[in-house]
Amino acid sequence: MSRPTPTRAVIFDLDGTLVDSMPLVLRAFAHALLPHCGEMTPEEITAELGGPPDRLLRKLIADESKVPEAMQRLMDYDLANWRLIQPFAGMHGLLDHLRDARLLLGLWTGRERESTGLILQEHGIAPKLDAWVCGDDLPTHKPHPGGLEEALRQLAVTREQALFVGDADVDVLAGAACGVRTLLICHDRVIDPAVQAKAWRTVNTPAEAYVLVQAELTAL
Image (tube, rainbow, N blue to C red; front, side, top):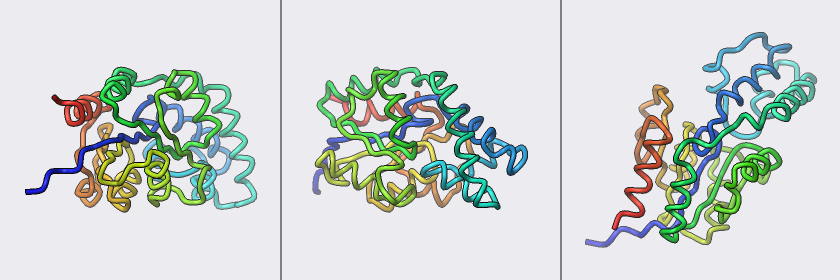
């Protein structure tokens, strides 16, 4: 029987996976959409997440001419509040442990590069990453696997040598399309069985994901 391909790299999503930003993300979109769509529930906004923010706004705002105004409201809200974003407990310990085990670390996020860089630098994450791909780096967006393929290229690893960790259905769908094992963090959501079937594993919280990744990839 052939031996499994050793894992050489772990690629992470950012929002909801490494940093606890989703409450702020949802409030920012609600603020941006309020004049154009009225009050929207977090569930309604979450269902449309994935890719750069202007794509979500275009899907939800009927009048295309109002999208730039909504985008400005979103950016202003983010700029005023981004420092409220904090890493999940245990995140730094996991990244340090994986680096000590000589695993390569990557990031693939739908967030644009400017705010991604601010968050990564603010919390000392950037120096721990060997590659990062953002939502405005490529013309394709999750669930298209192009960003994941670019992360693999930057890390110089094959799809069989990588593990992807994310918290959205589009992460699982992108991982499956790319042939990369994907660990899904559910955050108490009910997951579509068709999506769950494509995930390598599912857990409820980032803390559970960190324990599983560390146990699977650095066990002696």
